[in-house]
Image 1 (cartoon, rainbow, N blue to C red):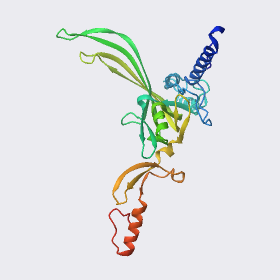
Image 2 (image 1 turned 45 degrees about the vertical axis):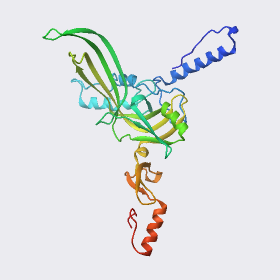
Image 3 (image 1 turned 90 degrees about the vertical axis):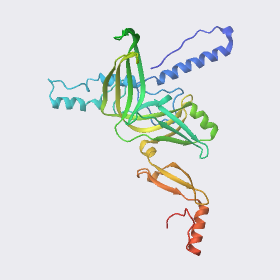
Image 4 (image 1 turned 180 degrees about the vertical axis):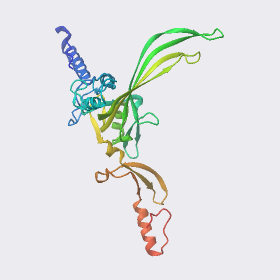
Length: 323
């Protein structure tokens, strides 16, 4: 998808206007690159286009819901025929060049993410907010107003009830979990990234691919809206998580989900053996498949005093590590 922008600029307006026109054309073309363009993400790239928005989950969900390979089994269809039809789905395009095994890219922003900076450690951490008690991440929502009507109760009180049809779109993780992604940054750069940072979920689709449920809210005198709510869940497996800056497309971090979720709780002690606190630290490569565990970052001076005391009189200071 490529938009061409043609604007007539009189010569007398000078080169400044020409530069503005050229910049506007670049913005339009770049924006078009990210608006649901149906091509897989090239994971070999080291940066993203400026203003990158990734794939459009609304378009994807609609395509999945209308796929002939995923429609419900008919009473006139044998189980064998149904299983064969569904098994063919991953090899067929869903939209454009995208198949179930392609690399999809979904950008998380706004209320879907939270960012915090630890100035002492120089670490910026982004967390993706999941729906409580689930492994689903809200990726988009739409609302379509249907007008209103006047309702009344038995006492003659009246209220205007607004009607709408609402759609919520979620990414449903079928395996693993998403905790956080962190990057080491100086304060000035961290401040800029917190304001303009995005989390990119790179994933492929997984069975059952799409699930749609509905709910209905009836308007009342106190809750003055009536809505039919559709929840669309796209089933995914996350392959990588990228942290990038929206305006420039600069990628600050990219990790596999397995690597992100492998971390250690590191306990910090001062020179008197008192616990100062703790922080989470990622596993190194050799430990990326290990279960999360606790590692204690013992103060070097304390260790020396513990060793000396044990050698001289056998009395160990408070806070020494176990022998």
